[in-house]
Length: 382
Image (cartoon, rainbow, N blue to C red):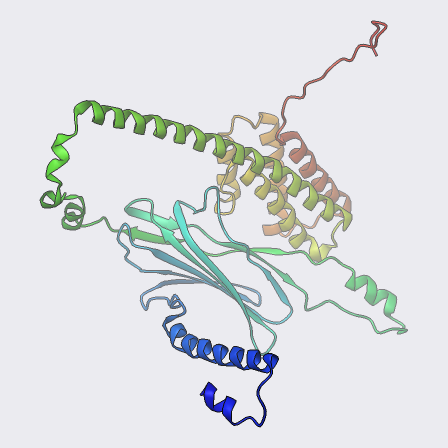
């Protein structure tokens, strides 16, 4: 093909034209090879819920949350899938973070993998989806704890027209802070079947026919040295793991204080809520304190009622009797607003916020501080 192109030219090709022609032929050959080589690449198959998946739906206002778990009758060792689907219309903001506690766990289940995706509907709404691949801790009765997310309704935000007579009033209405409302899904009970005896025996049965006949030639001193080396490595690995885990726990406790103080300061800057917004305001306030305690003392707050949560905090030696009494008064006051329809005034709301801030400050992680006295050259204290 190249020789034909060279002979039909009326004059000999220059050096630049010859190089360009060679490059084009080479590129065409490489492209032809690539067309056949990329045909084997396949995208991973999507995870589709089983027909017998356990499904529970929670609806709050315009938001609909569905938790699906499958297989319905898993065996110990099988992957278990939990999918959270949240449907919300236009004007509803959804905040559904990755749910975890401690070392990648969802309740007692280990988290093997996680995927999340948000799709927009033609009418402006959204469908948020989270899929967890879980590992059961043991056979018997287990339960997947409730999943938590927040919604913020922005549909009633008024934007006043420029120069209109009601601009000031409408602007003040639009300036009212919109607080997030916490939503919990239902927990899902599961019965984990044990591994069948036949399958367990087959997995543990050694294949004696494949043993190397020379394995008996290893002396007992060599085996003893290998065992000692493995023991030393194992103890060192355990010590290193515990050290890293303790360091991670301390960093998490420090972060819990910083996050809680920032959120309380933002809530305080917005001012006391009006009567119509008191319910959502106190929900946000109690959520800040419960999340702080969850990370500070490793407590699973979202799946416990107020009474159960107080019982758990009573077992924490770090919390004094005064702290527990303050926490009980604070949570009971928030429950009165959320469930009993009590509407406090602005002073009482800000006093509750101040009490929450004081509780966080008193229970923060504190470390000893070394104090040095510097002596001047004259020998007198500075």
